[in-house]
Amino acid sequence: MNKDIRRLTLILLFTPFALWIVLLIVIPHIGMFILSMREKVAPRVFEYGFGNYIEFANEPIYWNTLLRTGSMSLLVTAIALIIGFPVAYYIAKIAGNRTKGALFLICLIPLWVSDLIRAFGWILLLRETGVVSSSLQWLGLVDGPIEFLYNDVTVIMGLVYTVILFMIVPLVSTLDGMDNAMIEAGYNLGGNGFTVLRRIIVPYAMPGIVAGCIVVFMLTAGSYLTPILLGGKNSSWFTEQIYNQFITRYNWESGAAFGFLLLAFTSLVVWLGLKLSGQTLSSTVARS
Amino acid sequence: MLINKASAPFLAGYRLFIVAFFIFLAAPLLAAGTFAFNDSLFPALPWRGFTLDWFFNDTEPKLGMFHDRRLLRGLYYSFVIASIVALLSVFVGTCNAFLFVRCSFPWKNFFYIVMVVPLVIPGVILGISILALASNLANSVENSIGWDLGFLRPGILLVVLGQFSFITTITSLVIAARLKKFDQTMEEAAYNLGAGRARVLATITLPYLRPALIGAGIVAFLVSFENFNTTLFLVGSEAPLTITMYDRMVKVGSTPVLNAVSFFLMVGSALLALISVLVQRDPKSG
Image 1 (tube, rainbow over the protein chains, first blue to last red):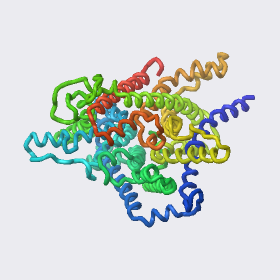
Image 2: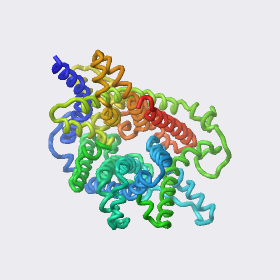
Image 3: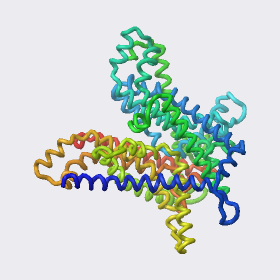
Image 4: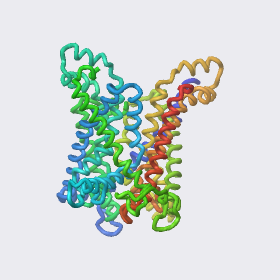
């Protein structure tokens, strides 16, 4: 009797999970893969093969964009880690109890503001008629208006801004769980600040670092708004190519192939990162 | 702590860095919010005096956001979509939390990773994969039996499904985290006192989970409200607010009415975030 109830509960709880994963994740992705293997040879006549992928490989502009997106995303991830780690350490270990909660909350507030509004704010600050340019002119530091938008530095800065909170939050929660005595012990054993950081704090925070890096990398590589709005027409971001194939050119087959390539590429990078750092997906992302 | 060992100049530099970081965080939000009150046709300096026209004025060229039909319609659709997504994802998230915290079944770790994966799939790809599947389905039904299944074309249903597909991971993680901390002897005590399963769930377990349920609902609502990437591909004629704003930004050029909307949304999300923090801190239910 009891065993039957348990089995029934399991089935009832598993059904929504299975429906969600199978109908909204697995089947759409299989469908997208099949779509990407299809080529239109005549109206309503299709041929299956690797044509869309071959087209991608033959067109340097496509794979250059993918490589550019990947390398810029890695750069953004590295910058976010370098800036985010000291901030997280300050919040978790140095700030007093009351300041800590307040700082953490301030860190979270931009999280709830849409990407769109954040990018809009940067546009107002950085464009030719924007706040920074007019302030510099008013101070007499420059003669004419300066355009800060539409270059790679601005795109990278905007992306770091958009994603850095996803680096800070898991770092704060891992560092929070660290016993201060461990740091004390490191000093008592004669380590200096750098040794303690390298041998004690960083290894302890590794799951948080990896979790933050994975989320930040995936979000950056998949971002659309920030590169388009801050980088303008020449931002050459891969998601923009996908959008162009799908919506502008109505070429769903090659759009699906591009989508699949982005997914495969980002998964490969994440897998490599996990292997190199000796972590697993469940020990990092799932925990934060 | 590290603080005791560091030299004073180092610490001062560290503090300065933290202050600079928070200025960096706040700057674009301040810019987006402040120009909503500038009495000018462009969201730029110089400052021409304080006005509330961009919220309440009812004539062109300074049409305020509360009189702008298209923005209000976008706000309405965003609200409807976010509410449905929040309810659905909290429901499935609760089921998932019980499934992974309470039940044991083969391949559990594997399924747990599967549950986390939607969060790291780029939103653009979720959007196109669901769009492609729904359209193929609609096309094949139309070609074989001639029914036009309009609900499978881009529109509210697809937007809801697309957002639901990854927001459910967030709600599942939030609710599971709280369920893990639950002391199961409380349920056993209730069983020993003669309560049935449904009664224990309704009077002991769910009230304990309530802060997490509300918190997860608010998070789901906000994430849905601000989502752009997934929505962009699935949107039909009922455009939610972020899409309407983006269209206007790109096609018409920005006017301070967009700042007014930004200000309105920032205040709204800050209030909701505050509520979720307060609810989860409530000592009586903790």
